[in-house]
Length: 167
Image 1: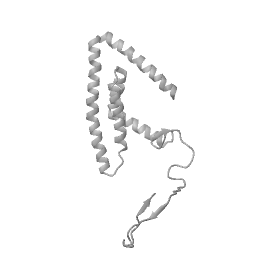
Image 2: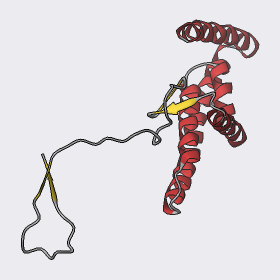
Image 3: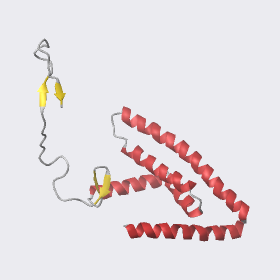
């Protein structure tokens, strides 16, 4: 994995420079710079509009008592898309614009969900990683150790729940 990340850190700028040279040769210097600035401004406005819509959908999901998993995923994708559009370059702009398309986000969400259900990707503790041996979360023994002291005043009714003072 570190080798893949290192390769991307080297390859992406080289590809972006090559595309800049090619586009600059066709359009000229100032139109190329204007196009880069225009994609950054467009990315900000797209991110704002779609981000607010995603936030409203998340609030509606919460009000219905549902976990807003899809909306959180869409928000993360929009954040990544916005960062890609703010990064100068035509390749990153193209990837960012593709990530702004709801059908693309939906396809990625479904693919990730299928991979998680199939056990190809294991989500544990809020992160991604290889499946670890052992019982699934919530399936193993549960031991809770601790000290407590009942601090219920004697004048409380007998059916009142006990108050616990934690040390």
